[in-house]
Every structure is written in C-alpha cells, then in structure tokens.
Amino acid sequence: MIDSASWAERLGGDTFLAQTYFRAHKVIRSNGTTAPTPLTWDELNEIVAAHRLEPPRMRLSRAGEAIPVTAYSILRTNRRGVSWYQPQPAEFHARLAEGASLVIDAIDQIHPPVREAAVGLERFLRTPVQVNAYASWTAEEGFGTHWDDHDVVVLQLEGSKRWKIYGPTRQAPAWRDVEAPEIPTGAPIADIVLAPGDVLYLPRGWWHAVSADQGTTSLHLTFGLATHTGAEFLGWLCDDLRASTTVRADVPRFGTAEERTDYLSLLRKEVLAALEDPMVFDRWERSLDTTHPGRPRLSLPHLTAVPPDPGITVRLTAPRARIHQNDQAVMFAGAGNEWTFALPVAPALRLLAEGGLVTLADLAAESDLTLGQAAEVVTALVSGQAVAVVGGST
Image (cartoon, rainbow, N blue to C red):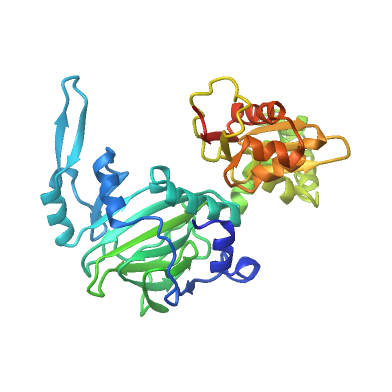
C-alpha cells in the first residue's frame, strides 16, 4: 500500500515541500525497486467489464480529440428502456491499435488500491486528490502538447512513456483566468522516459507532450492535486467577513460621493484588519481540512448505531480531519462537522486520525474505554460522515 509515509519518502518529504512543490518538475527513479502496483492490466480489464463507464468518465482520445463512443461501443437498451454504451472488445482494441489512448477519470473512486494511494498522497500534501488512469500502445500523442490547471504526480505502472516538458509560458495560469498561456516554441526543457515505478511531479501550467514511443505498451496513473490559490483564499475570506455588518450592508450605489467614500473606507478597514490577523492562513487551512467531505462511505448494515462488537473494523473517511485538545475536552473536526469528547477519548481519536484500519477493541484499549463507550464514539463520527464501518459486521 502506498500510504502517506511512502509518498513523503518517495517525493522527498519536507525538502520537496519547501523547494520543489509549486516550483519545479521532479523525476524520482525507482532504480529497480519493486513495489506492489495499485493497478494491473487484469484489474483494468475487470473495471471496464464490470462498470458502465461512459464518456467522459471513460474515453478514447487521439490527437487531442475524443473518439466518438459509437466507434468502439454499442448502444444497449434493456426491457425497462434504460440505455448505455457497452464497449465492444474488437472495436475497442482496434481504436487503441490505431493510436488512441484509453483514459478513465477518477479511477480512485472504483478501485480500492488506487484509492488508498490517493488518500496517502492527500494526507501528505493536505489537498484533495483525484486519480486518472492512462493507457497507450503507440508513439502517437493522445492529447498533443498541453498544460493542466493543477499540479500532478505521475506514477508509471507498466511499460514506458516519454514526457517532453516545455515549462510554463504564463506564471500560475488558472482554470478561471483573464488570459490564456501562449503555446510554447522551441525544444523542450526536459525529455524524460518513465519506466515502471518511476514518479514524475509536474506543477500546473507546465506544457508537456506524452507518448508511448519506446516500443512497449504503457499504463500510468496521474494524481491530480487540487489547487489553493490566492483567489480562493480571498473567496473564503469574503465568506468569513460576512460576520461584519459593514460587509453585509448594501453598497450605497445611489448614495452621495461622500457616502460612497465613507463606505469604501469602512470596508477597507474590515478587509485590512482581517488580513493583518497573523492566524488568518491557519484558520483558512483548518477550514479547508475540516470542511472537505473526504471520501464518504456507507456503514451498512448499521443504520443508527454501531454495536459494541470488538471485531467491527472502522476507518477515517475524512483524511484531513483535525484534533484539538485543551484542559477540559478534545475536539475532532472533519467532513464539515465537529465533535467534543471527554479527554480520555483523545488517544482513540488520534489512532483513528492515523488513517489505518482499527477495530472497536483497538479503540477501547487505546483510551481505556469500554466497548460500549468506543461504539458510542464511532457512532457519532459515522453519523457525521467522518468515519465508516469497513469490516467485521455480521
């Protein structure tokens, strides 16, 4: 399993965060080290066969254009009138052999090993992660030279893939922007071939072209990292300032020049005071971590309460949940909710926050609780979608 510690070790830990993240591309070679792969060809075949993955979730792309789904699938309709496109293996294979690339978006939502790797990266970088799978069979570039509006971490799984990296032509381009980056000219600044186990980090806005031109098929995962820009921080700050009467007040659009000037002066004071708060970034980051819904999961068959069964296994579904403790209580915040528990519960909460699988017996022992008390804590967190039962139910 690729957990948070594994990602930190591979990428370079604090040095990566301080010197590379947002700033430069980085290649981390496997040097022949073998590790369990989160996705195999057999598993990919099963995913395509077992799920109704239609465009744009699953698509074939060639020369930067999506191939019509009718070129590799047939429309099926059941007796209740429900229709879907079912891939036809012969046509599917033919399009891939002609130069198309296969893409499956958000494969972390349907394949647990990839989901575990995504959660590990999210815990290390403290940002939401979505994983797409890419498979190619020819030297043809499936997407042309392009840039992404988010940072990516690429993990090569099978075969080899060439990455021509051109760097950015506009500093910090965004999905919502006032100007589009210019297409790069000249030779790439880096020409890299990734082999199985290699990792590539690429900041947003860096133009690149990718092809499987090494005479092998290629399968890789791209971990897309959510961005947190100054614009998004200011959006949060505006919402936070709604506590102010001045900010909530109507803008004096039809007032006198003096009234308009006075209102702007009051508004400026409110905004500057908020920006001068030395803890404003910490409050924003805490909000990002604790309000994100995480990866919600059902806890069936337990609808209202988790029974005090020592073998019931649970895990955190809000990877960036936070714990705060004072002299009187311990607070646990995640998935948009916050709970207050007695101080003896703190060790159990910290065990949950590590992100691994734990049983009710583990939680009870960690905090010297009864099984009933541990079940009550878990029931509260399950009801708030921060924890889920993942095993041991009978």
